[in-house]
Image 1 (cartoon, rainbow, N blue to C red):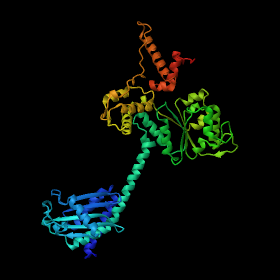
Image 2 (image 1 turned 180 degrees about the vertical axis):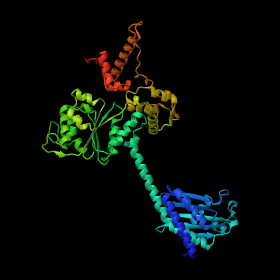
Image 3 (image 1 turned 120 degrees about the horizontal axis):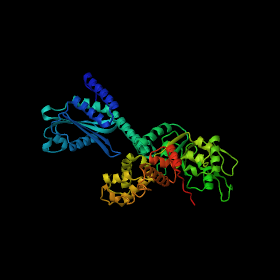
Image 4 (image 1 turned 135 degrees about the vertical axis):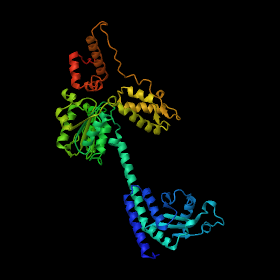
Length: 510
């Protein structure tokens, strides 16, 4: 079919150019299709138009309807659209008619279609495959479609089929890429580490600088604050994300077993070594080795680790052969590493090799603003896991959680919420105080002032209260001065000064 005049050819060419531009600019396929339908309606002088995109392989369709006069009744309903699309697919070519009753094989038209005077339907094709159908109608008062209208619509349909095909592919790729990013972020990215408190914002800003690099990192923070999650974030969002992430809990393994696990061994290296064993350092090659509770590593093992870092090679136990390594090492500890160095428990040369960048993860009591969002995140996850209807938490329950000191930090909060979800009935939608553990206040610090002398001066009473406060807090944190100082919101230097001034001493363990 050849367009009859140059004027019509120009009309189609101009419409194709406009449609190509809008597909390039449109953020979504639906927006582009809506504007494209207006082009069809204007070119054919139609009163209503629709497009159905067909994807038999996925059994999905996209349907868009445009009415020229928004105040008019919709005559091109879904039933008529489906019928017209079926006719085009059957004939594999455009259809035009002024007799809808004959097309529908009806002696009498339904009343809703009485004002439909003329119909034009054309296939949208890409690589000879029909990917959709354009349906157009005119009302009786406006006359019928002409053969020229059919030519214009048919030519335009053939020209733009590939635009739609490519737009669908692009939209699908964008959506898949978006979903992949969301999945990765939910696992081990900054967005997976929940928090908007000032303390966490400082951590995020530091991580944004660390992640693109290959520097060794020391992570300090109390147990349960999410140190391993931080390490995974650094690995999976960094330059070594394609390599392995190997985590080792140095506190969970006996010292001799930790050494053989790290460095590996050959058959016969010691009693019970019945075969060669690849060490975790070698398994982490081209990736990241995360050493949690690093302070439990004995001095001999520390010396060997220092050599691995310096020489970038490892020698399995009982072997004379060395193996080259390229490993990023991240270590974590619940206690202050500098204090451990001063106490001689950690080699200073190893510490300064490892401590290229230091990240301090704040305890949950210092980021109370994050408790609501953390709670709702855990609630959503565990409600889905345990198939419960819980979708939100009551203000009173949040108040209880925010007042608690959380000695177990985020891990404890996570366990509390899971227990609450498990204890709730299946039809309950709001997490209430009765769902929470009865002992949430058990670890709070209650400090009554010890009145040594009821008639004592204010200075004496305040000094006595300060002593009680410091002693109770230090005992709570097993005399970890850093943790106690953080809870009392004073610096470690002030903490040391007060301990010395008041003559406080750690109790001797028998």
